[in-house]
Image (cartoon, rainbow, N blue to C red; front, side, top):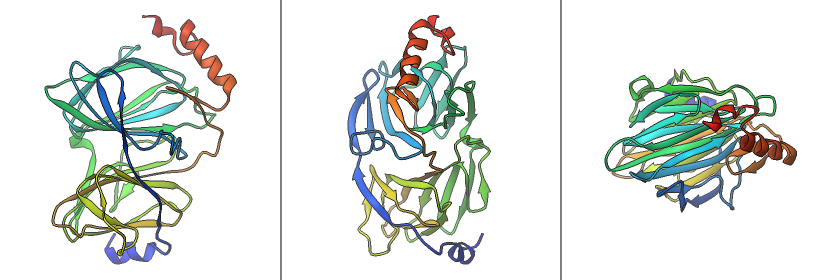
Length: 290
């Protein structure tokens, strides 16, 4: 799609409705995360529950812990992490690799450093609708070389989910989602369509960029921008260095969210049942006893 064609699509560009810097907090064992979604200022952003930029060095990590009712998307920025669950699924994701895990009715797993130095990455939690919360767990994993990537007019995008610059991801999203990793060279200008009824946000990883309006002040790394409604977003790199950010959007589920740590359901009764299931190793947590 040419720039002219993209421009004709953006009849109602989105604007920034909220902007704030991530908050550093401890997580797991000896790990540090910069949390944007999932903190007191922004508990949820339907369908998104948590966004963490994590940093961890051995012997720290994320030992055995459970999940139910949503999906986790882990995208490695630096280093490597080894994951292992109670069903025997095990593997290592390295820089640029992706793991899209559907916890469904229940997973217990660990995520631990697999190389020297500091491991860095992003983890996004995506909610599941009530009809999908108790489905069987599944994994979608892509090596860095298999992530769809395209470059044009000073813009490079890695298509984690959804579509950009005419390139589609192979990932299936049960909750309709787009997840795009953009790098803009100095002087580059991006116009990216977004389904008009989806919620969306930008998280800056590197450099500084101007978003939504040319006269806006530049946004630096570790800031999140929540976008209003419209049919797309614009971004400019007016600096002399590379700009890297993720653009994430998703179709709102519109259902009640009741969360107790790593369990996300629709009612308190379902949370109480989940706690019992986990404690007694039943209804999806049978392997937790091992």
